[in-house]
Length: 295
Image (tube, rainbow, N blue to C red; front, top):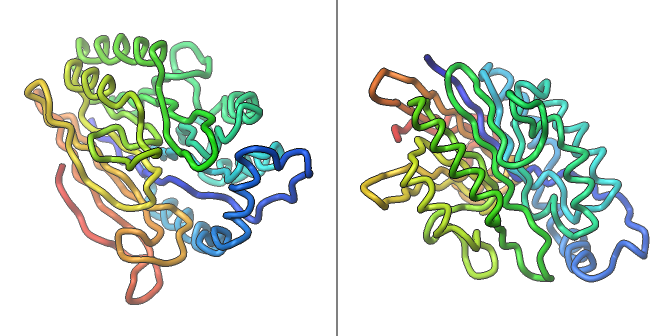
């Protein structure tokens, strides 16, 4: 069994719809000012379109998008986010997990649930929610939600005890079936993955679950850069791979817009994963293959 999985994140769709004055209360005013002062120039929709076109050219079996399509969680941003997700492919070919910019305020949360429902459904139940499970070519894809509303100047995430308990039971069942397991989450869930005010607050509990039950790959966004780390605990070593913003218009090789392709192969007693990075070249400013690596 084999699955080619494309992973992108942090699209930050623009331009930002003009907000009503009443919407610019609390955290949103700082986010809006940050967008106006420079964030809008950091994220290019032309670059994002090139990334999406290149993903389609690679013909992956499935696409994982790990959050932050929005910017400040405005009601008017959600239809734009849904329309963009449609460009990635039909809902059965695309899986989504929300990030902190999608869940920007408490008022954003009902829109997160309704807008992204068809990209966050479990195969067996047909119901949306977290964690969800999708089986593709014999590989289990588990989606978690770490996006929560936070105070101004904070961008941390949390799974919460209820979601962790369901995640633990789900992984245990998949482990008994000896299926390859890929976990999708927005915030980096490993030690050192996020700085103060930006990390997953219950990462210790996450690490305990995945190393106790077993997982073969964890993919995330949030930091806007390409990273490869490992969770090493309970005699397990689980690769954790972060990806750049899919719309980043500049920066170093590890920060410029890009995405990852994972070939996940079930070879009986072992699961083999090879990864290939593609993105905007710093030398040609065009899409290029950035190298292959084994996890």
